Image 1 (cartoon, rainbow over the protein chains, first blue to last red):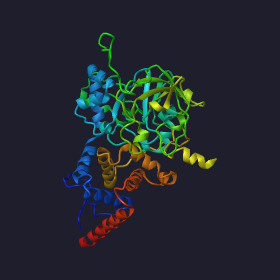
Image 2 (tube, one colour):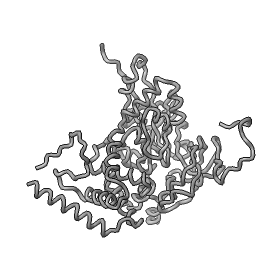
Image 3 (cartoon, rainbow over the protein chains, first blue to last red):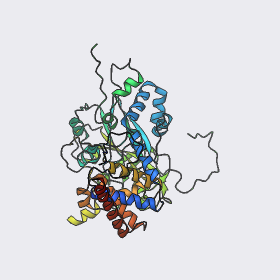
Image 4 (cartoon, rainbow over the protein chains, first blue to last red):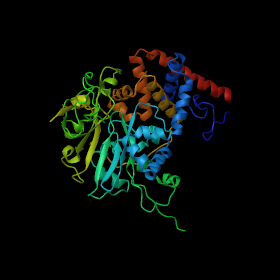
Length: 215
Length: 111
Length: 113
């Protein structure tokens, strides 16, 4: 009996359906579509394998590094706000699609939030895949209508004198929120700053927080 | 950015190359109701906004692209700013709260 | 009057609709879901099915399927339909291949035991 756990680091492709459980209807459909298209040479099986590796390599850690760099380097931040995609590419974060990136800076006066009401547009090259809640109705329907109530649900209170800007992605632009750098972080290194930055802060639903550890 | 000193005269741009709208322009979002596919949500139809930014690279109309037409419909997308109170009569929040959205040129009319 | 709205308002066009609490759900993608996402990216890269065509294809499933299928289930069903429309595959070809895939799995279970 094959033992095919999922904690393996492997170089064999995940094309074979794992022997553990019976494939569901849609898995069978996916496998069949892929195999037919590869047989007809519309693309190579290696391209699917490679794209899985590409996807696995894209996590919020990348976005956190972008944020930390922007916090530490004002000239980089300026470039980032001017053209998000090229600034990410400077750091080796390649964009494998045609999307552009606008980085939205949170300030004392403006708090940004991103959503895709029509589907699930999300800055995948720099943040990885979005969480389910971002793709489901409650967030998508309500973020554009009652952003403050949505933020409260995430435990985030934004005072009334701070403007909330909700960006609804619909076309070729993707968004990334550049959160406010928390107070008391002046002595931290760039890596330590990056460790503070969460995916949800780069979506805009929570701030970045910092609590000095007790000595 | 081009200034009067660097702008060379006599250059004729192709149709659609020069953006129709500029930042600061007041625009309305059209009220048409396409079926089959669209990328302007119904909650914004007919709303008034301001052009915040011209998305600099021309790109295909994504509503055409959805039907496989990857070329021949390039134009400009614009990032539009719309106050929440303009969108929702029942908006709860600050009057300064706003929405930003990218909209293709053929959905926008100058006010 | 009710049926017009089904046609005029796409099932994914939900900005501003009433909705309940945001449940903070997320899940690690199943292997087939990840393969499906990779498939979408490769299809878009080759412009066999671009991303916008995929979106339209998902919308075209209609509100019942959009409501009942999960995210990646919608994608693969949409891909199949679009490939048929483009004459790249036929429904019969896909059905035969799906049977073959399932038979192969069953055979692998028998030989493994």
